[in-house]
Image 1 (cartoon, rainbow, N blue to C red):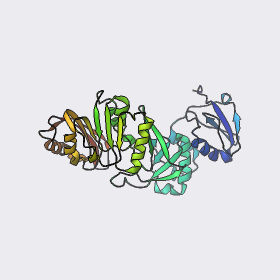
Image 2: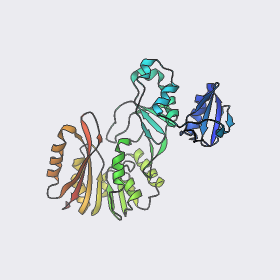
Image 3: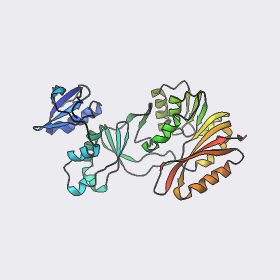
Image 4: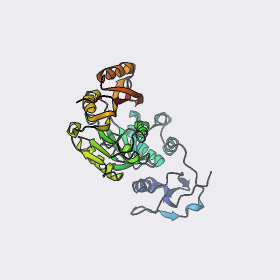
Length: 343
């Protein structure tokens, strides 16, 4: 199949190809739909538009004159660009997370001496402008990622998913691609005109799909971390939902709402302690979405304990696993129908 032709092409001496690609990736102009072409010591790079302010010599070519081929598996492309010993090739990442144009990979310790060269290859193969290496576990009450920038300049990106724009810096704000299905579910779960409280908003991970797709009357979202809050505000603007979306840079208790149609408890650490507050915020017939990290061996017991907590006030109407959270835990979500709100 050779019918895909990029709009522009740049021919660069092979010695300077990596530097040129790095600059072109920063400008977001590399056409990632087709493979680059290696020809007589030069690299023909497919482009979406003409480069600006790249201080490297290149020749602009007629893209229609080249036999372009669709990209294959990005991991295979990255491996083909790297000249590493066989024992290290076997350790190259086969999976990663892409947030906007930021690539997040887990790097084997044996590859540390080559991490910049590995990161550059994966950036070219995936079209990433920045590459981060996972350097530790999620940290603190605000669930901060532990990432090391190993390629590119990092910083703010826009992650587009299911018609929703999320604005964030992947090194400062936690965003899990594994929660994709739950965000999709939230995009169709609410009725028109609802009033919704998001008690652990983040950047609107769970409430922004509702804002964009469900036409609610009002969403009130609390986010105490100043950095995350700043990206929440940018995400609201990026989706043009300022009219219905109210952000509060404080703990969720300050919302002090009543008669909500829906309350989102999108935290994972002992979230059940916020159930009484959520039950007091909801009207009769409202829905609470309770998220929590639960030991996989005790999911049934967890469900029973939550049902005892809400006895006389609500009942479980839906239970599902969002994702594997750790070696022993699962990220669970329970939808609770409020039958008698707390006073």
